[in-house]
Structure formats: structure tokens, C-alpha cells
Length: 422
Image (cartoon, rainbow, N blue to C red; front, side, top):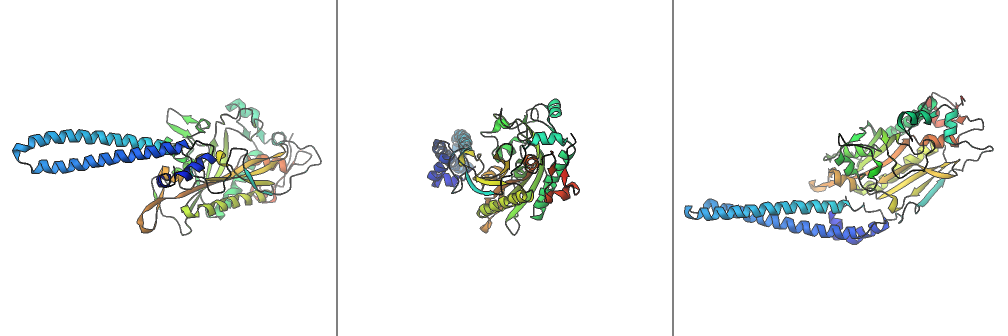
């Protein structure tokens, strides 16, 4: 959630952020009113409690003949204190709910608008050209006996698949290449739980507008994660961190991810671009708030290094405010060129969530003077199943074979070419 002090002292900044997101600024007015009501209720409770404490001392010192009346007054006062405490609790809950309705304050320079209002920051590499009709990733995957959608649907339903043979090896190769990249840059690897408690899912901001995309196990009151970001954000919940000398605690979470893809009917239903289950290696960083923007650029840089190594043509976009999700203050998407679609498609993204998630989850560090403050959190994908799509389509040959990028070959036992078996 956002800083209540910022809401109180700079409501216009909060309103401007909400407007840029396409949200109503009235959410800010409601939160301000709830804050005033909360503080008034708390003042009333504290005043009555102080009166109760003073009255208790009078009862203790009073002569016997006065005690009965004073005790009766004490009982009445106790009832008033109890009611005031309940009212303060309700006001606190209402303020918390109002505050949670406000998205993170966007970073200066983030474009306003929705999904189509992004800004292209850079385009890298030449668009692949072929002297033959290129095949899409599913046709290539079937010729390689690498992707089996039919049996995935038979076993689990639509938008599930089997990665088979070289397909399975290719995904593991990409993930291990990314893991080496993470290890080389000081990340601690974690294999994370894929089931989390509601308070962890809520704390990361995923139970808002896109809650219908999340699988929930009602009998266990647990959620399946769509990214290891959720578990990684909860890893240090309610802790005071000892940050290293460079001010950043970096983790790389390897996990299977699950997404219902609600509302995406008819979109990318062919192949493995948009499926319900996939694997991902996610970078996650806890850092000092003042270092968050610089760390965000570092995460993007490591993602671009992976794009270069896999010899993919790509662009980087600055996502518009209305397409950020509630937790992100800024998000960069890295989109690779997909030849058969004639467009760039997102392969990875990285988000600066500033202190938004940490406030919800109680993750703090000890600042100068010993006072605890919320850390900033950031995340960014370093490899995922979808990358297979771009690799197969970009590096295909006329006979249906696929050239393996040089940097990926050591992770495939030196294999240079993926050869069709059909």
C-alpha cells in the first residue's frame, strides 16, 4: 500500500497517479476521509482510556464510603472505553480497505493511459528475414517432436501441453542459462512453494483487479502462484532485514507457475504462448528505497543480456500506468519479434514496486537512528517457457530444423541444430 503520510500531505500527487492509471481520484478523497475518521476515533479511545486510568487511581485512593459510587462510574466508563476501542478498530479497518484501493504511486515519466499507450524506449536487432514461408512455433515443435498440445489437452484440458524430448531439454537449457546469469550477478537461488496463504497473495497486490486469473484451492484456503514473485515477496514478511553492503538482497526463484488466463478467450490459443502452466526463473530484490530506480535498470540490463545471448530481435517498452497492475510504480516489458505473427510479443518484464508490497507484508530495514522503514521490492523474469516460441521461430531453417544459438549450446551438450523427426 502507499505511504499514509504521502496521502495526508500530498493528496494531489496521489490523485495524479490514480488519474494516470485511469482510476477515479475519488478513491483518494475516500481514503482521506477514512483517515480523518480513524484518527478521530483513535483520539476518542485514547482520551477515554486516559480518563479510565485516572479514575482507577481515584477508586484506589477513595474512602470506603465513596468507593461504591466510584466503582459504578468505573463500570460505565469501562463500557464507553470498550465501545470506543471497537469503533477505533472499525475505523482502522475501513481506512486500511480504502488505502488498499489505491495503486502504487507511479514513477515520474511513466506514460499515462492503458494497454496501447506504452512508449518504445529502444529497438534492438534486425527483424529476421526468410527466403521461405516461416513456420510457427507449434508446427516447428511438432516436427521436432518437442511440443505435444493434443495430449496436454487430453490429460488436463485446453491450454496445457507436454514439452517432450528436445522441447523439455530446451526449456531446461534456457532456465539453466538464466540461472547461471543470476548466480554470476549475486543472486541466491530458491526453489519456491507454489501454494501460498491468502495474506501473502494479498500482500503482493495480486488479489485486486486480476484476482480472477488466480487458481484457488478453497478447501485449503491456499492460492497457486502465477509467479514466484509472490513467494519471494513473502519470504521475509514481518522481518527486519540486514541488507548487504551494496544495499540489495537478491533472490532468483525457480518455480512452476499457474494462471487461469480469465478473459483471454480467443487470444493466443495456438501453441504455448498463453498457457495455464509454465516454468519461470524470477529475479526478486529487496533494496533501499533510494536505490530502487537504479536497481530497476540493472534488472532490465540482465534481461537484455539474455536477449542478446539468445540472438533475438527485441524492443523495450515503458508500460503505461493503466497497464501496470496495482503494485508496480514502473514496468519495462522486453518484447521479442515473433516472425509468423509479424509483431513483437512480451517475453519478460521487470517492475519497480517501491515500498508498496513491503508495507503490506511488513518487510523493513533499520535506518539511521534505529528507526525501521519499509524496503523497496523489485522483480523481473530472467527465463520462462514462452522464450521457446521466439527461439524456434527466429532460428528456424527451411527444412524445419532450428539453429541453436551459440550461448545456449553448452546447456544442450554442444548441440548445434534441432533436427526434425517428422
